[in-house]
Image 1: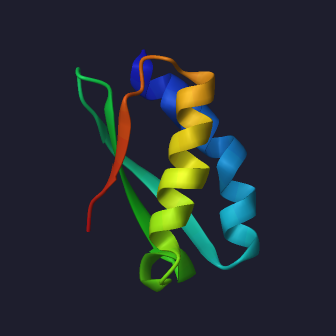
Image 2 (image 1 turned 90 degrees about the horizontal axis):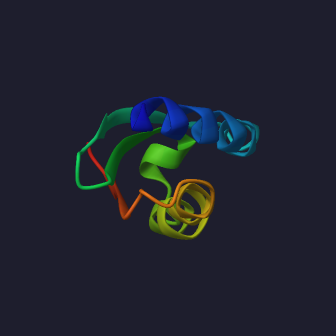
Length: 75
């Protein structure tokens, strides 16, 4: 159930990332509320990807889904 909620919020974020040639892929959601994602395309190698991850994706997920505690990037 949590995984579906996360995917729904990521669908809202994707158009912004895709506008810059990137994307985000959901890898896993742990029972502790840790969301694991993979940034792809231009986002995967961008020096600002940490900011995108923490200030963009993580903040949006925490705002919409209180169960989310953290977002981690996996390679």
